Image (cartoon, rainbow, N blue to C red):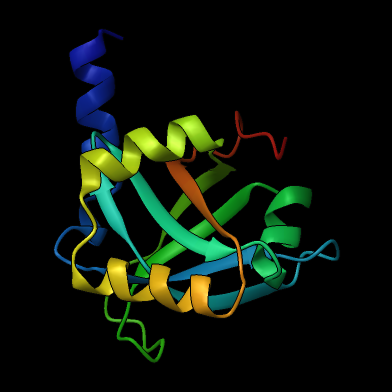
Amino acid sequence: MTTHEQRQAVFEAFAPLRGSNVVLLTSFRRDGQGVGTPVGFNLANGMGYFTTWTTTGKVKRIANNRRVTLAPCTRVGKVTGATVAGIARQLDSAEAARVLEMLRPGLWGWLWNMIYKLQGRTPVLYEVAPAEPASQTTDR
């Protein structure tokens, strides 16, 4: 598969999420039970990005199982479209700085970062790539 074909496949995989800036992120407990949380979401360069703080349950769940699902939703978590499977990974500070420069978070991003700082919480940025077909996917 050529690089162009790979980019096209990624673009098509995240097609249900285009136009939505909030998704229901479902991360999975060790027993396989999914836990859904609405998160702010951005698509750029074929990848999806969301921010949370280090003390949330989803950080622990993703550390144990990188597999996630994403579905466009309202701010309160009502799903409005198709679900997409993905693999999440936490970005290190240098990667996060590059991505934030690329995304240029708007008012909501700025507001959430201020809330994190005022509460003394440390924000972390995650990148989500489309999951490979089930026969090729690995959790780690």
